[in-house]
Length: 279
Image 1 (cartoon, one colour):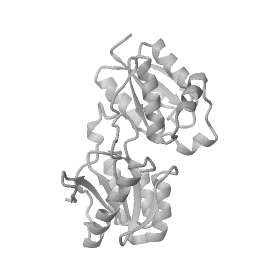
Image 2: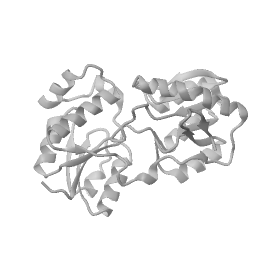
Image 3: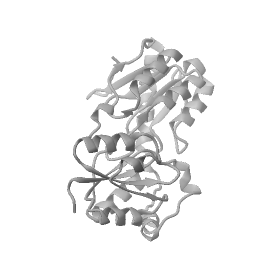
Image 4: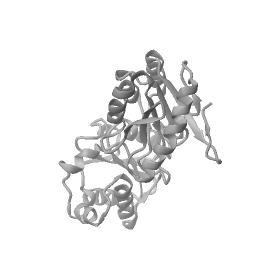
């Protein structure tokens, strides 16, 4: 056992790389398990110990971490959710766990994997451990401001997004004129924006929130340049995200692209009485 080591179970995107770099700056050795077809290949170059796994190989993850004395780990990055229908290669431990999961949605799967790791003596930590600065800021973050109608749409869409999160369906809705145009499910936020934005066009408002029982160890909502590009393609008007409860990557590029496209980006805080602060 080496307490100085931290394990990373890596999905896609830049989050695993950013975390690994921050952890190493904090003086920790980094042991990375990366998923084939999802994780960035360059992770291998920044890891102290590294291996590739296929989706579902839980036993291999546990064995690799135990071999290298890992007792703390984090889940970082996305896995393409639709792969569970066609591209899973479980080992014995992964298959055994899969068969025990009654509801095969995000939270249920990730919590089950986390519990399995902790039974093996590997504690799962918050994904933002070394990267609190990535949490979404508060207020209007772009040059363009909200109209009265857009504020009404955010307030309309907010409890609906929260409700689908409570059902572990998704974390995002697209609305216009207090009408739901699209609800995020397994296809992900960008696809929901494309569907909803095609209907709402220049008046579409995208609302993205945490789940009511959001676990900071995994599956935080995330916003990046691709989100803005998806909105720009359909001429969507507003992106409203729950402040402090979502990740924001490449913030300068995000705000620059939003300003070019005339998109309002706002970090929204839900107050104790349930009202929303939009400034």
